[in-house]
Image (cartoon, rainbow over all chains, first blue to last red; front, top):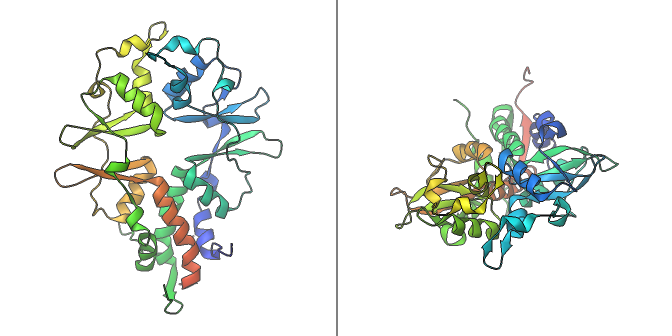
Length: 162
Length: 162
């Protein structure tokens, strides 16, 4: 693909870059071997529909959502909380989820965030470092679209055929 | 506030405008007087953490999330599905939620979507017409940042003090 983000556009988007990543210490997470009841409690409290799942050494192993858990409560005759008994986060979490490194190209981040409401950020050892969210990227977009015309002269190159 | 989106920037963002609104017929909704068990079933199936609540004449009255319902299941000794018995959507839904008209300024949409993952769209009679989502706006942003440099010459106005 020969589409690249222009120099000035990228510079403007990155002026908010220090806020792109919500650091791990500010993100609610659960361990893969936690009981599902615990994950349900955490998810019902944090205000996020989906959170990262880690192992005991802080490595990212998946994501878990309220819907993942509620679906597991569905029995033959309706919802039964008892169906969660004995189950752990690993039994319902989503694995093989998209994730990025801190060095990820803005280009790729913008594309991945079309389909994911947030992206887990890991280091080279897969240790969880935080998340990049649509919310933070949209703050940068607001900054971009306002500053573009304030700081730059923008003129059409030629009349392009559609 | 004297910040406006420039003409060309706005034009590029709006080239995807026909997709900005996910029309009502493609959005899962519940009625305010539906039993909470029904809303739980819908929310666990649709893959959205939060959906619009309508009245019998398709007017928007609120939003309901999985977390709203799960929180209501929390008893003194843990979660109890039975606590939902006899309750309706109206008992837990969020009211006074941000909403927009189809004619809303892009400026305002971009700002509102920083704090809301989607915005219900209503007509002048408050009849629900669809939703605007961060996902669709991000598609437009991808389009904007790639087309800007392809179609326009962008030059700094002057050296601005930071």
